Amino acid sequence: GQNIDQPTEMTATEGAIVQINCTYQTSGFNGLFWYQQHAGEAPTFLSYNVLDGLEEKGRFSSFLSRSKGYSYLLLKELQMKDSASYLCAVSDISGGYNKLIFGAGTRLAVHP
Amino acid sequence: DTGVSQNPRHKITKRGQNVTFRCDPISEHNRLYWYRQTLGQGPEFLTYFQNEAQLEKSRLLSDRFSAERPKGSFSTLEIQRTEQGDSAMYLCASSLVSQGGASGNTIYFGEGSWLTVV
View 1 (tube, each protein chain N blue to C red):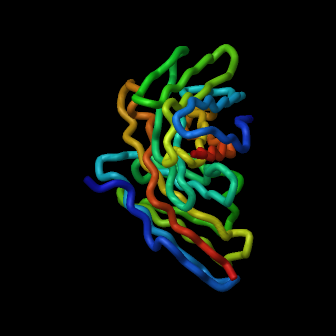
View 2: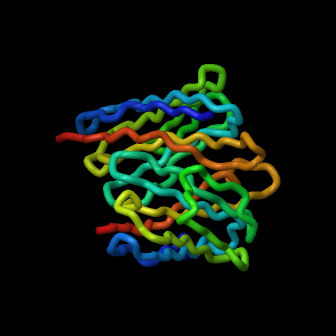
View 3: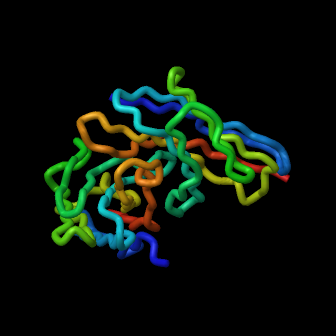
């Protein structure tokens, strides 16, 4: 089976840095995704990691350690518009077919 | 540029009625997914298609739910005899699976179809 854990809520200050952690267990790991979702809207793609290490994309970076079943999303220079849910999702190919399994999401509130 | 399109965006229906949602994926994408999301939760996988073939169905998909993708392009998700517990946002997503490469795994979501069963 699959299990994905991430904190339910986090708060941070505008201009600061925040790290959102995600741990996972899956039998058919084929990559890890981070999505951003504003209230009432669809998730939008942020990043993808399939190899260990850090992937940087502007203010957002994502890290993966496959041996530890661990990832984090790092958001720098926080802006008010970054207030959203951040979804950790694992690409799972167990059973022969590839699908994304999502965590419950971390609601980030950015304060002035 | 047309992304994943879903309609209707909102549907309010009485318990026991049937509803159907339509999804038009990104045109060159060969995979199409249906997810369900309730407040405070992440999207839950329901089913997916590779072209017109339905490859996997979640145990969440009871016999009241049926999905089709007859020509390998658009898809429909029908819920029969709706129950209040079916109230959720139904998300469609698509991806292009190619030989190798990370980009083939990226799934792009539509805006979702909100269902309220009263």
